[in-house]
Length: 137
Image 1: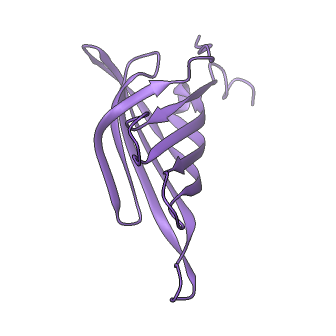
Image 2: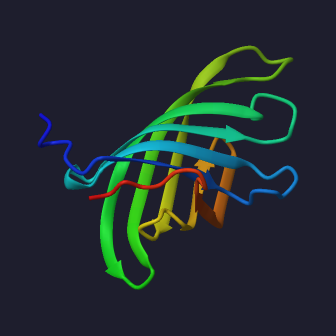
């Protein structure tokens, strides 16, 4: 089994316009296994608003592929579902979809976008966490 996970590493960062008031920000923490073209982990969407969309935690899985094209060396897709609660006066919850796409360099910096219940954010920065060094082999 350890051969299957050879080269696995942790990637952390953000998708979105960090520092823009009210902008939704997706913070990711992912285990990447390039040999399997797989990623899995958690995305937390935060937004400085009242209501159910202010803090969302989404378990995600996805795919990663090398591109060999210029400064964009990798493309990543993520998918997941989370429980979305309907604000009053309505009552209830349902599973809502989350999707993200990233065009990044080897340091996990680039451009991407994400969508979740009635929100679609495109062409925003992807930035690796400053305090994390990628240990790729």
